[in-house]
Amino acid sequence: MHVLLDEIRHTPLLWLLVFVPVVFAGEALAPGSHTLLFALSVLAIVPLAALLSHATESVAAKTGDTVGGLLNATLGNLTELVIAITALRAGEYMLVKASIAGAIVANTLFMLGASFLLGGLKHHAQEFNPANARLQASQLFLATLGLLVPSAVGGAEAPQNAAFTQTLSVCLALLLIATYGLGLLFSLGTHREFFGAASHGAEDEAPWPIGIALATLAGVTVVVALISEIFVASVQGAALELGMSQAFVGFVVVALVGGAAEMASAFSAARKDRLDLSIGIALGSAAQIALFVAPVLVLLSYVVGPSPMSLQFWPGAVVMMLFATVTASMISNNQRTAWFTGVLVLAVYAIFAITLYLLPPQA
Image (tube, rainbow, N blue to C red; front, side, top):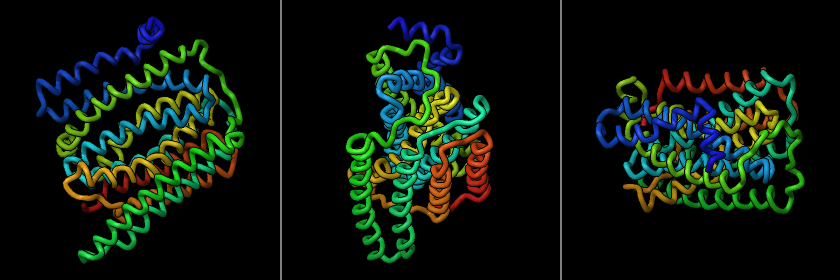
């Protein structure tokens, strides 16, 4: 425990952990102050993300970048899952779908592009194993097809067409979950030798003991999930005051805040020339959301939602996810990258965010 306390004492960013009890106190004392709770939630999630980043790097030092990236993506996506389930119970299906699409695009473009940029500013050129990137990009392409088909055939308002779209969504959800499971078996089991790191950057000088790292991962994930519930309850009121649409809130704000922990880990790994870990976190998280989280939410809507939710997205979201997948596929064809690659990828994300902010889709 003294290792963790020393880390907090010597890292100014972690001093922001004081906002963790503050946000809970604010939620109890002033539940109607949406903008204040929104700001406090962001300030509380930032140091938790940094803490999660250090713990993940310590685990990755023991397990390897492939398993470390998967672990970070899984724990990080619990935040998105909690946010989505909270919105699902409230029947806010536009927010749920926008957060799903936004998380996929943000992880594929913003997280990956920023990792390339930050790593490239410190290292002249960086290398990564293209096999892992290609696998994740292929899974993303499959998931995009799974989201494209219900959106393409579900435009009519006829009751029979709605029933068909819902049945199709359930079938596709089961198929995507099965594919994701087989992908884990392939990358971590039968063909794990294909996915070793291409380069090994500098490790932490004193990585945490594995027990402390795992306990920190579990504890921080629970706290982030609790704060996420406050965040999703306050973000709608804050969005109205700031003039943001529900789709923009889900696609950009919820996606970036929900993925803060993963982003901190990915950015730190890139700066340490461990680009395989960064790519594993970014594309692995996007693939997990597309192949597992989104289908699970469709199935959960039958249990916790006021009505079943389908995989039918608005056309703009499908187009953005498709182009994000194409961008990831193009990047995975090369095993070297530099800072300008990150600029190009971030520019694609900026185009999507600006367009959605200025011309939001109708629910």
